Length: 383
Image (tube, rainbow, N blue to C red; front, side, top):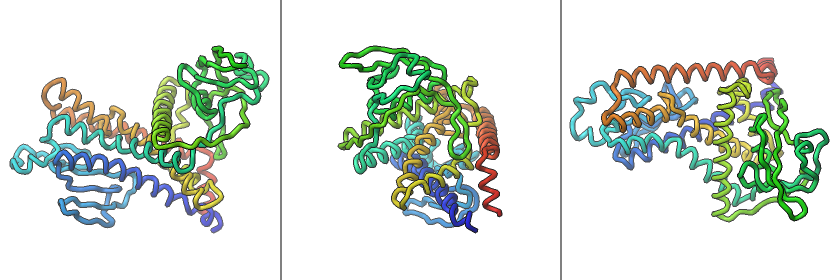
């Protein structure tokens, strides 16, 4: 019972993160669809049996379903949750065609599809900007207080007191930005511009690759320079600078994620770093109990939600049928060919997409089940 009392927050935190982000994503689809004159029949948070719901004045059924691992909007004329057209759509009366997704111009259908991932990105940017304005952005100046012996930094000629100005052409304003660039680079030389004694010089630094194990026993490869900085400052932002910093952070998370995926495909990074639903559950709970007060815990969970929102938006843009990116690929073919992709090919594509998504989910869940924390968690849960 003591374990449950200490860890009850995991499931509520996970459900809160998934529910909010799925709502944001699906509301993006819903809002742009309504702006384009499309009737939305169903707006569902979750899949499976409906727990409760209601109709709005436009006839849309808003509902919460039993399985909280996603959601969907069903447009008028859809046969199912994947937005494939109903088999009887050709016989649809003219007045219904005007409000059907499948009879809208190509650019409107593409806009409706893009709106889901775009809503996740917009949520992340606005949320970060609000935090930066309200609390400030904590950062460490990108100044090397000390340089470790026999480190990559020492070998490249970095000295204590050096200020890093840029890495591979990207301006560096904080130690956190520097760390982000270094951690995702594996065995890759970095061109660094540093300021030393009022002068600037360019150094080539190849970070050492180390295996980092976090408090939960998860191991991942990261790049390491071997410098430390013990300074700390808070940067207060106005609306413009807060928005700019939020966009920069969002862009970095996006590019770093894509780089990490590329490294997994090439073999430079271990695919065991990939996490699935159990991993998100664990990270949600950890975030919700990381602080020393309720306010700190909620802030930590909110920060985690921002990161997951970016990841959700990005993943949905991958060109895989069943995902938003897959629909956009079909629309690209339609734009080039001048006619929609045949129902046969779309059905084949959706089956492949569903298979790929299920395989990825199974693989990621298997990774979660093989991580050290899973045994301790479930042993404590049932002991």
